[in-house]
Length: 116
Image (cartoon, rainbow, N blue to C red; front, side):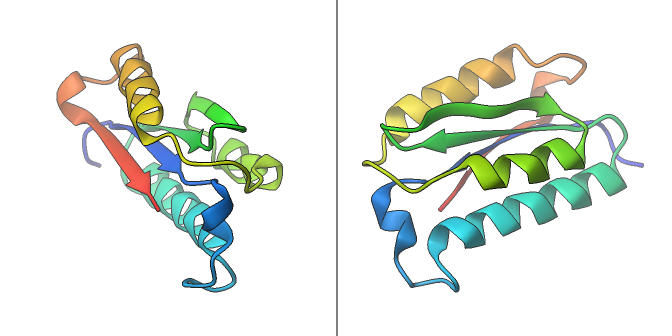
């Protein structure tokens, strides 16, 4: 197995995430992609961790702290709604701070993904 990684995935849950450029909409496409990536990461590396954050100014923040549980990643999908405007700068700062404080992972194996 590969080295452990810490990955923070940021989801654009702003009002524009309901646009139909991806089916059924951009928000659902991002959530499916995040779940699939987490599943792949957990199945190919030991002790890797994934966190999910949202970027809307009305529903902002780390929604799932760093975890090795695919079930926790999947459960957050039902609670993310499309609202407000995106605040990318604030989201990136939050994710970088979370990555800095992630346990059991070398900083060289940290990744930040803005999915949207």
